[in-house]
Image (tube, rainbow, N blue to C red; front, side, top):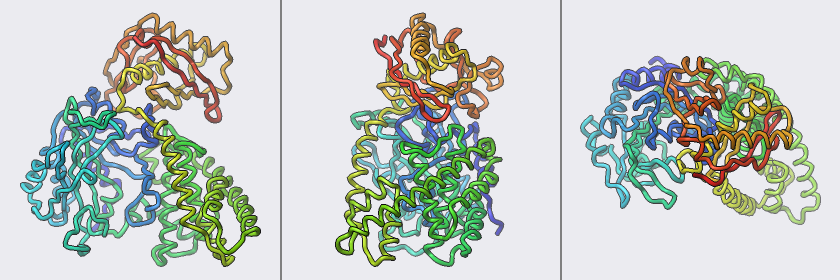
Length: 596
């Protein structure tokens, strides 16, 4: 049987749903715009939250795309057969149009007719019901009517068959679609929620009809939506009968290069195979994060910290294989070449990708040297033959020295490490970090409160006024983060603003607010928007029809909203702080008060 390639599945999926009246929309950035509730775009629905809540999408009620995603919650699982930190999500949406039956019928037709998956290989799960929502008999009956035997339709609780956009926001029950790998069931109670390897999930159809509010209560949405997600990597793996996603064409080039650099054959030895998979996955993710249209660089906070961790883990596992860290840039070059036709931003930003990767690898090499020196000191004054867990964690937390390396060196010297103590210190650190994150990442796109809506409009005024006051039309928005308390706005500029310039920008924004200018939204083609000199934030790729917001003679921007109806509602604008964000990028924090 001919191997199905990744480009074929992308094309088949989009073509199928286009034939069902769906408009194809481009992949959004991996770095969410104006959404502090998540670090990365983790699913195709994240950029669409405002439309799931009832806003009109310029492309209509039926949409489909291939969305870039990053999830790092299962980072320790990477290296097994199916987990990846970066993946592509094939998705189709109904925004207040079709619902359960139509969605399930579309999925069944695509799987069995287009991909020609035998019905006997398919199993599904549906929501078992609870006090918030009834048992999903409609989904079960629809599957049964299509030919899925009742003994392969499983009812599972909210932990398995319910999808949330975040702590608050759109949510609902789902039906998940699995492929039976042919492995024997681990027990008579084995079902798709089991991780024994018999079942592999490839598609999830979410039926969004609720909004979870800040109190955790479920309210009915203005419209019923369908949000589906099919993992490209897992589906290709299953279609070709591969044992892991690393056998697909998405990884084979990188794996072959890693194998060559290591002088070891992939698949022969368990530890080296796992190390090769981790390097292939992490460098792919790093390549996409560095090359994204809103691309980030390694740092010690937020997205930059995750990126740094991925690169450093790659270096550590490369070291285990005997590969020089600098050689990992060769893997990134393979990925840029492989993906640049599908995601042109990788080709456009290739120089930055390779430069930042080289810098971080070099920096981590220095970290390793410092960590080894500190560990040598610990061992020199060690009483007994066990390194204290808190000490081992301090080496990691302060010097970035991985626990695996601490254990490896200690083992060579006949010593052990208090791993339990290390885990306790790590858990305490994580708990403190999460408590901070809960405060930092409240809000998000699902938060359509008056304040976040008005702050969003204020960012439009701020960008326009920065250009005017600084006499620089090349200034662009380079990042935005809005919570109910404040806005954070990043823009390109080579120096700090003077106190006089900051005051002039603030005054210009407040002048626009006092003029009480109507905020007018018009839908038009991207060509029409460009012809009108509308600002396109981040230079992103757009769909055929876009929303353009005009604020009198002050601003004209392509944007998804939400916005105030007129500027007078914004009250008073104040710049709290202006500082450096990164090389050539400035950051402004500002607030609104006295809202109307």
